[in-house]
Image (cartoon, rainbow, N blue to C red; front, side, top):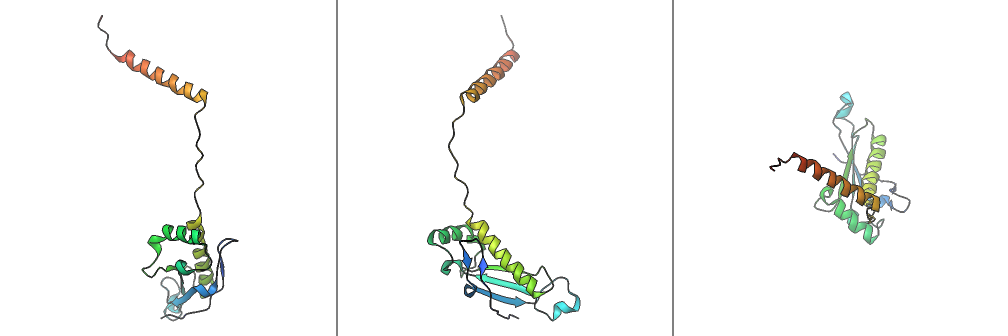
Length: 146
């Protein structure tokens, strides 16, 4: 059974805020602890967001996010986050919002570009010296027939 509800804005980063009207929240019956209460209260939260049509993302961020989250999106392009960690609905709502923010934050984190470096002169000399030493050890193993 689903009960849609109004959702507040989710702050992902200071630059990115997902508006509440782009989110769909539904409540379903949860599994897990709760005793008899679990059979009559819809405490599990299902939060849905469509990044393809979101106004919160720039064009570059949207393209990067869609490539990173490709496997997590439904066929309709929705990202679904659920939470049934707690026994009450308000805490699950907050948990689902934080999960969504964390997923988007992690997906938008770009790797730091690698700076090309050259080995120092000392490093080159040490490398050559260790190769020479290793070669001498191996040549000493060979049997000599004089």
